[in-house]
Length: 385
Picture (cartoon, rainbow, N blue to C red):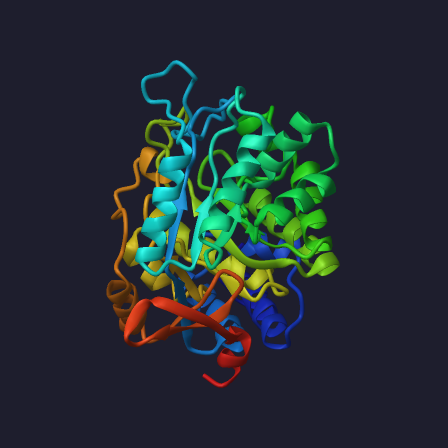
């Protein structure tokens, strides 16, 4: 495409965005053309970002819990999983789980992000017990747990319906679901990455069912491996379609692939330019999602900070005890302090606001930082920023 044609095509897309019209598959693929100015795409994404979220940059105080890394699946992109007899393999006991809950409480965490391996010798009841144990002892901590892949495994274990599993976990104390396991939906790619685990239909149906019973969920896309621009945009549109149907997704997180220690270690990890372009295009395509997160663990602190000008309005949180992406070569810190996160957001020209998992503003007791209460929805705050 010659320069004049490209500029005219971009103007068409810009006019659509300014008029709040929906972008098409072809629009999204065009924006991935490296000849299309990244700055121009970012500027357009920032328009949408500020339209939806004002000048606010969100963060939370959270911790991760990976109860086991033993897993029946052998996904090519995963550096975290382990075989049962591998020296690397582990399973946490109740005492260790409770210690994590106590540590989270003492550090003022509002959220625990719980995901792990599918241990073939651990029944569904073990996974449910972890949720109930934490919820009973630390009821104020929001438990965001078990990806659709894990729910699919629990469905297989129990021979019960997805709805039954989700309602049972909700009754045990589950507050919401993370968005992991989506990877890339298109079968041309998914079959290469993880042919045996929950397929696209199952992932979408599990999230649909979660939304129907009142569980909010996150959604993700793993990019920068064997997929192409078409597969990324196809993935985003499938998420957008489900959001049209249910409205249950609260945030989208584009996840940059880390190849180290995986079966795809020959692949070079995505550049910062690809990260920012994907962030911006995600913001433009997902017109019906309120929030886009720049997950600093995967992007790196500097790129995540820059992403606040390329469509992202959230940096995730303090993220204590993250293992999955550090096993895959992430060189980011294991935890960021609240002051550091607030400084990163302020340096990017945004107003830092702490939120809880379901995007309510958090109010801290000035005399005891570990005590907090949830406030109003952050959408109300963004409207006045």
